[in-house]
Amino acid sequence: MSKKAPRAVLKSHMRKKSDTRVGRNADLMVQLNLLLVLHRLAEESRVKAFEEKTATIKVHHVKAVAKKLLKSTRG
Image 1 (cartoon, rainbow, N blue to C red):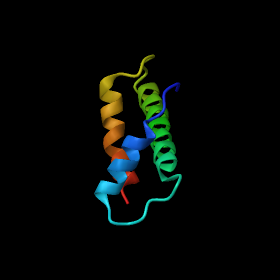
Image 2: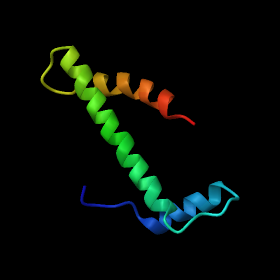
Image 3: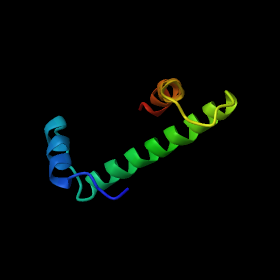
Image 4: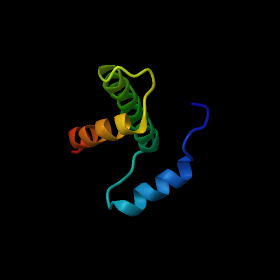
């Protein structure tokens, strides 16, 4: 992944949404967390496509896995 999320924009969104203090590297932690979730989504979509014996990952594979993944990652 060549581009990173703009740090200033991300920090401003984080400050608007909460009244708590935001650490120096909180924006980087958010970006890393996003990358982990995307990686997990890709891996589980690949497994779902393999179970259905297709060579490519299609939209319905991602949507089916995304529902389960979002439920499991909620805090």
